[in-house]
Image (cartoon, rainbow, N blue to C red; front, side):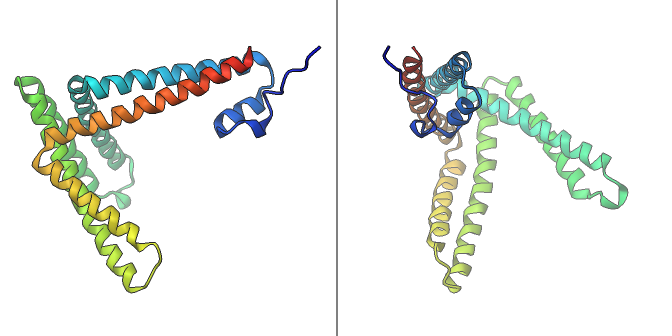
Length: 211
């Protein structure tokens, strides 16, 4: 009888996650379960990537709502953290930041649902806010580069490159917030689409090996 190749040989597996799963389960049903999970994950990424790439408007608006709600949840966590801390460890900045962030998220949700173009206004404000933090981050990276350059530290050029890219991105986010938001949504969608197709091909090829 012809012997089949050992599909559980770790040297034949490049993906470390799949390698660990297959090493922990040397029976065929478990291996098939891993393959099915990979197919489901790949199909989900392809669907999300397709929507973000070719139907970016509704998905971009949905991401805007998710981001705003996430900020609200984070603000509640800050307030709860302030309440639970002992009096000597409490910080007024934490409470103030939580309250301001909560008011901001509630205001954005109210304005987005109260007017026909409120969702676009919400996206514009959020993108401009992110652009401001991106701008300050880019400036800080350039300042760090100058310090490291004086100390002749190797690899400091990467900080300068990152700082310049952040400055350029912040300009687009502040001057064209809505356009930048949907453009970034489409770019991430294309990335998910390509990655999902690659994962699906790997999962299907592995499934053929189990037959």
